[in-house]
Amino acid sequence: MKKFDNIIILHGCPPNEKMITPKNNRWMNWLENHLQKMGLNAIALDMPTSWNPKYTKWKKIFEKYPVTENTLLIGHSCGAAFLVRWLLESNKKVKKLILVAPAKVPEGDDDTRKDLYDFNLPFDATHISKEIVVFTSNDFPHHLKSLEMYKKTLKPRVIKLENKFHFLYFQMKTNEFPELLEEIVG
Image (cartoon, rainbow, N blue to C red; front, side, top):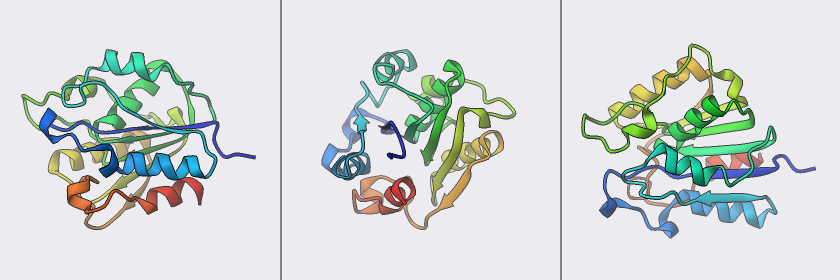
């Protein structure tokens, strides 16, 4: 019996179009490939204008994929914010939610990703998933503030890895993320 009906992976949002990481350098695509080779129904979505994301546009694309109580959702950075917001607004519950370096606090007043962060976290949001896991490392200050917000409302199991920074290729020097793969299939 399979663990999940499907696995949906969402990338983060670079600050501008020039900083988009090529697919072959993203751990999301590495993970998708490994999970598919294991026979799992996994997809790493490509959302439009990731450097200037709009919640309604992302929602329209995201909702083309089935999300059940036996789905695993994985989101990186602003993709994590999108997933939490979508789960709260849709009143859906998933089997497992994994957030990697989750974002919520804008980097500054001109942060183009603020649209995805424009939602309130309730006192207790644990109802959105049977299990919630957050991967973190020595991240940017605004992401560490976001992490504290998510810890209060989601009460996740936190996995802290050393020297992964914001889990980007140029920081990790690899597109591989074996710790995340192990969390999924282990």
